[in-house]
Image (cartoon, rainbow, N blue to C red; front, side, top):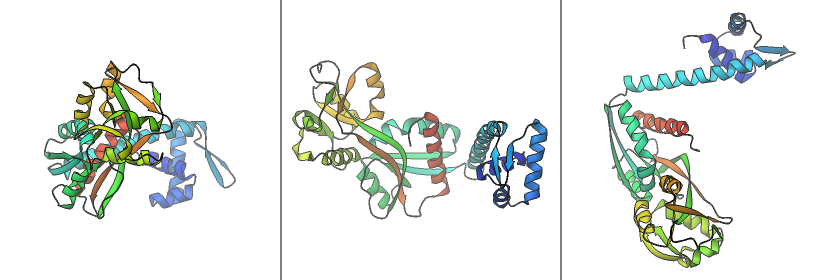
Length: 302
């Protein structure tokens, strides 16, 4: 970076040691001391209190550390963006994403990615989580993004985003349903669920098993192949659905659906990148990194 002194300060503050900072940056300890002294003279403040063999940040040091962290983050982001434009600014990525991710998480990320890097061609296939894993094992895609719990042999999984499944009904016409139910109350309600092989269904099954409830005990009215199909069905039915909260944010805000809380039962899961062991290309890694940055910027939990 243009001002190496800030990098020196950041290393000393993080390590709380001039010696460890010198080893980390491959410079001598007197050089570390010189850079810190120059910063203190530049801002006319003390950045560290030195007592015995320990150093501690002063109030001024803590303030500089806050700014320094932001500056270094922006510098790393610049390096990332420029590196992608330069060395790997063109090519092709073939992605497979499970239905929920493809419909509700990826659209904005893909739009921003392709706008920033127009020379990179992206293709997207979608299906349920088992479909994506099979496509990966058959070498039909570069990597996948799935939502299940169980992992296929020979593949590597890396969580990147937390999701919650919520129990919903159409707001109009279901006023008699209470706002809170027990897990066993679900057994008597008409339910609309995803198809076998769906990562969503797998999460529901695992959550219910913790309460001694099997899927076979549920009153399943119909199984559908996508969350959009479930939402469309619920708009014309008094049935209950269990879907990703990402899929119904707009409808909940508009009052089309409402959430029913299930006492003591939560369906928390993580969306994961999945790839063949050791098969990630540099361009794939760049896209995954772009996705992580977009998620953090949006304020989602990872």
